[in-house]
Image 1 (tube, rainbow, N blue to C red):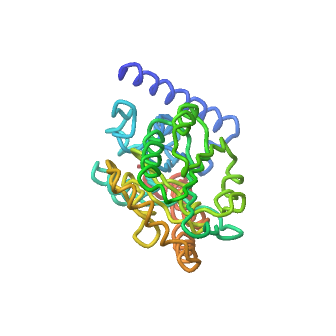
Image 2: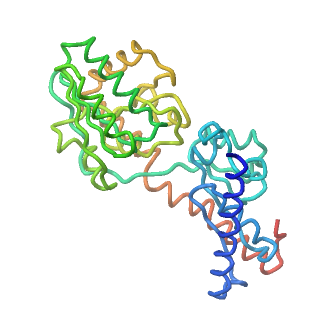
Image 3: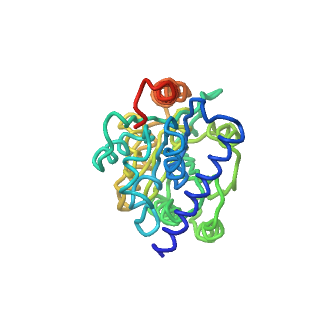
Length: 331
């Protein structure tokens, strides 16, 4: 498996190198400041790095998230070019502080590292809470194994069986290979648990859904993933004032703080899960939701993208120009 994955990664790198070279030459950009920006650290970054011999002024900036950053989040624990990547880019911009610290420990120079949070737009209105002790919980993800949605379903069914006085409605947004199995599991739910599967939605549709206007209120987002980068769904939920229950993996603890949600251990017990769900009943007040939304706006607004451009991309463009003019070394 590793041998063939390595060959595939090399092939992608060479394809990316050839495609980028063709783009530069066909557009006459050989003597123009150039920055190659990558949203993920993929073999395409390696392709850009291979072009440095031909175009020494080419600068490389890459974000990193989860599966492209942490070995344990990749299939078989293998990341192509993991130990060579520390010298391939000029700026490494993980989307979490945990990712930034991880790369620093792997040898990436501090001057090349910047933690660059993603951002989401403000909402039109905060999500309202459900009345009384009624509860509606939302999950939003592709139904991939890493999201552990079967575990979530089993935990919710067990919660409902142990707390028959709580009327609970679980709504899931997202499709994928495990969706039908989830629906089958939900068929065994006790009478006090309703499970609704809304399927896939566009970003705009899901953002509006998070505001609870279609559901009569929402009481929190729940995520029990085995691994994460920095989940945008959590940012969207908190921007709408929703508290978040999440497992303490990846950069989740950078979003889910004590005043914005509840962290669960990765290998949580049913008692820990039940306690977290019950605590959400205390997060229904408007002032709490306003506080959560303000915290999200402070840390995960769209201004993050402008700051990233100003602080990471434009300096590299200026450095590329300086290299062309012979005023700066190429490496």
